[in-house]
Length: 231
Length: 311
Image 1 (tube, chains in turn blue, red):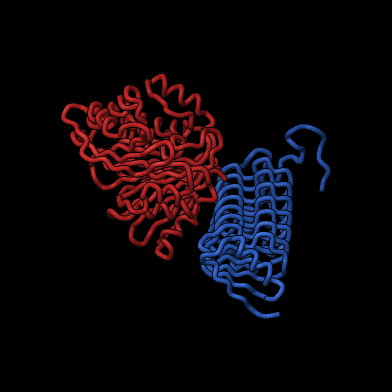
Image 2 (cartoon, helix red, strand yellow):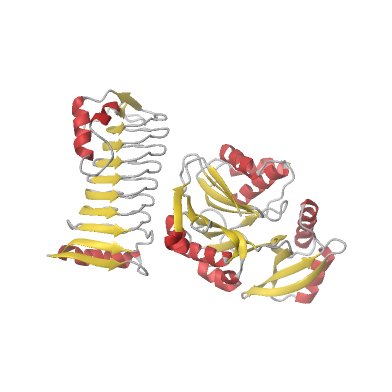
C-alpha cells in the first residue's frame, strides 16, 4: 500500500472527487485533497480505513454516511458535517455550521472551533465533540450517543431528547423540553476526558470538574403510548 | 435545500454584476428555477426596466412612458436588453424625476400608471438601481441580461427553488417595493404567517403583484422605513413579526441588511474581504468563489440576528 496520494479538487465536481476517493482509497494510507473550495459532499459514503486530509474549507455534508475513514478538514465546514456516520472520524480543525453529526449511528465527529445550531440532532449513537461554543437546540431529538461541548451552549439545549447525554463545560443558556441537568460522576468525567484526549483540545482533566451533564427528564415518548424499553 | 441568496458590498464602484453572477453560480444547486440580480449602479439616474410583448410598437409604448411621467420628465434613452419568443425587455432611462422622497413618490406613481392604465409590465423602477431577473440558471440570466458587465457599488442576487408559487420572470427574486423604489429583497425560506402579515399591509393600502411571500417581506420592510424606522430597527421588528424558516437580504441605496430566523433554520454566512469587500451568502462556497484567498474573516449569522453593511 502506498503512503499518500494528492488530488487537486479545483475545477472538479464533488461526484468526481468522491469517485477518485473511492477508487484510490484501497491503495493508499492517506489521501490529501487540495483546493476543496468549500465544495459539498466531500468523502460521502467512503468505507475504507483511509485517512483523508482536506486542505481547506468544505461545504455541506462532509463525510456523510462514512463507515471507517478518518477525515480531517483543515478549515471550516458548512452544515451537517458527519451526517449519518456509522463508523470512523470526521475532524474539523476550525468552525462548522449547523447540524454537526446529525443522525449519526456511530463514530466520532470533532469540531475544534465553534458550531452552529442543532448539533447532534436525532443522533442515535456515537460521539460529537465541540471545542468551542454551540448555538441553539444542541441534541434536539437525540436518541443516543454523547455530545461534549467545551464552550457555551445556547437555548433549548437537549430539546426533546429521548436518550443519550450532553456535557457542557461552559454556560448553558437554557434547556429544552424533556432535558434536565444532573451532577456528573467521576466515571463520567473520566469517560469525557478519555474521549476528548488525543484531539489537541485546550482543556485539562481538572477543568472537566465543572461540566454540566444533561440527560432526558423522561424516556417516555411525548406522542403518547407506553414507556420505551431501555435500549 | 431551497433557494440561494447572495449579497455584496464593494469598497468602491466595481464589478458587482460579475461578483453576484459568480456567487449565484456557486449556489446554483440550491435553486434551478430562476435567477435574479438587484444592482446599485452608483448613480442617481432614474431607470425603468420594462417588459413589452414582442408584437407591440416599441415607439408607441415608449410614448406611453412619456405620458406617464410627471411634468418635466422625459425618456432620454432606451436599450433593448433581452428578448424571448413572446417578450422584449427594455432599460428605459428617464430624466426629470429626482432622487429623494418626492422623486420616489413620483416614480411609484409612474409605475402604477404604466401598469394600471397602459398595461406595461414594470420589472423594476429606481434611481441608479435595477432588477434583472428571469427563468434560467444564474449564468444564463446573467448572460441574457449582460449582468456580468455591469458595475456598481453593491447588490443582491438569488437562485430560486420554487416551493409554492409560479416559476416565471415575475415570481423570480429579487422583489421590489414600489413605495420605496430603490429597495429589494432576496429570500430563502417560507414566511408561514404570510397571510396575516399581508392582510395588515393591505389594510394599510399596499398593493401586491404576486402571491409570493418574499414580496410580502419587502413591503413589510418598506412600510417600516416609511414609518421612520432605521433599517436595523426594521430588521429587528421583522425577526419578531415574521414566522417560519427564513434568511433574507434587503438592499437599499446605502447598503444591504441580512436577517436569519430565530431558530436558525435557513443558513447565512458573511465573508469579509481583505480589501473591505463584504459578501453575504447562503453558503461559504459562494464566498470562496469570489474572495478566494483574500478572505479576512468568515462568520455564520446567528439565529435571530441581523447585520447591516453600508458602502
